[in-house]
Image 1 (cartoon, helix red, strand yellow):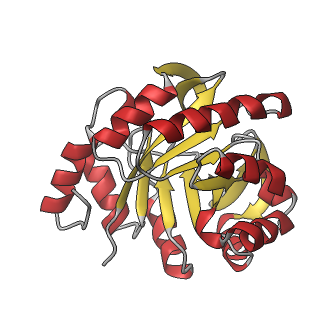
Image 2 (tube, one colour):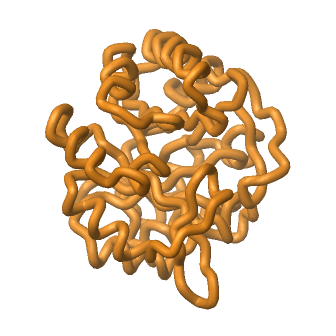
Image 3 (tube, helix red, strand yellow):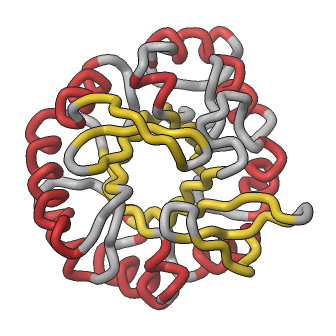
Length: 251
């Protein structure tokens, strides 16, 4: 069995790491390059950087940040936020990113997934999906969770896979920042119906939550932010406990 991955997520706004609850009430969580170095040295398998306020004029800033991070760490990292073209991806990969993540731009232009997978390979294309339950149905949301759509989470995830994405990063907006656990039923359904890795995001609060995401949710990786940034859970402690529980992880 493949090892399960632990992935700290750094949400970037104006060059700083921030964290909120249900995508709102952001607070400062530190310098992204320093945090990246710390996680790289302390057991993280990968990192994800999401520029949550990305706009055209900020693209250069994100590219510069990628360059600094790449020089500092020795684990794979994914970069997302405001990516909408082959050229955007080319810049970030050339600056040292290992994978890129697209979200709203993929929904607005699904052909982008095909184009990116064709040019760069599926292995470096992650499609992030933010969804919340509305009347009992998981609906995809865009623009950092601000814009609801009629897209069904599971139907969209299948299309994303068919178009060539190598991984899906699923964030439950209902669980995000609440520290009440991941959306394990939805995760298990995604993991069962799809053949590409599913990264669980939204809801990590305890070590048991991670274990549940892997065992009940069948996730391939689990992503979290505040529990790591604010030193509530240490990545190496988490992995040691997961190992004891029988979850395959790299120590």
